[in-house]
Length: 392
Ligand code: TYD
Image (cartoon, rainbow, N blue to C red; front, side, top):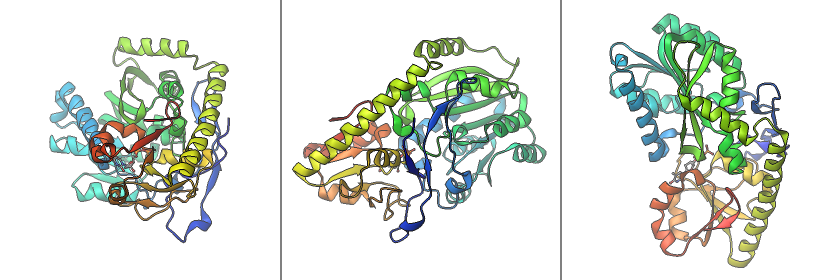
């Protein structure tokens, strides 16, 4: 299926610089041999992850809690980490996860290509190497620091088109009894919820247990545990280890069986997904236009990467959605990619208290509801589109 020409979802545009945006055709497909769900055309990584990258993990207190809990869980389960253990994070962003290991006095290294966020981590005392992770980097890190007990990549491994470089690199850097932890948007949840906005340039792959087993099996890494996570609208945590080094948990076989039942290898599953996406596209565009005609400008809440897919796919622009509020200072004053909707600070949202807001940051709904009780008290309503279009 195709979602048409899409901009790079985090490539916000400065007003007056709208002329030279890059677009690509967002067309997902599933590999019939390894079941890996992927975007066929993949924009160059350097165009996405660079000094202008505006995503800061620490902006969400809920995500910060989630990553602190992940680190604490791994430290408790692996007491030897405190005795000269070594933890590596791929795509360490602003150092939110690494800082929990740093606080416990554990040797750590973040690897992060986007200078904008890496510098924040370095400023907070997190050991960070600026660059992409590939097999060459993995070997250099092993030479300089020794092998890793744990390698973690949250919301990043499925972003790396050169996925076999990741497999080779992890296999080279990991200790014989080490573990590789991945968190990524889960294909099962995306299909069940028709959460098509999980698809954008950075999400080159949408993983399932089936695909993770096949892809990393080629590099001698076996899937030994899986655990669903509530964050980012449906995430799976996969733990891999050198093949034969540990017994897989029962949850792995259970999830693989569930994926068969879900029909992940069946083209009809994806046909159904495409049809549901098209209905949401038509319904959402119609609802926004109807409400804007009746009660004045609609706004957006959360200038998420996901919103770029929604806006472009639904053909919505500044005439339909006047502005999008976002709490990230680096996004404020910029225009959304493609649709060119102004991004504004939360103060404007509080001051104007619009009747309707499209909740583009639906994955943070609980945190946002607790922040917006005053607006809700005034009768403010969300426009939702996952898993279907509605008003709440
Ligand atoms: P995120 O969940 O990271 O989605 P994506 O990966 O699709 O970009 O983005 C959430 C955005 O919402 C981020 O730009 C910050 C913003 N935000 C708010 O404006 N207010 C809030 O209360 C929260 C939690 C997030």
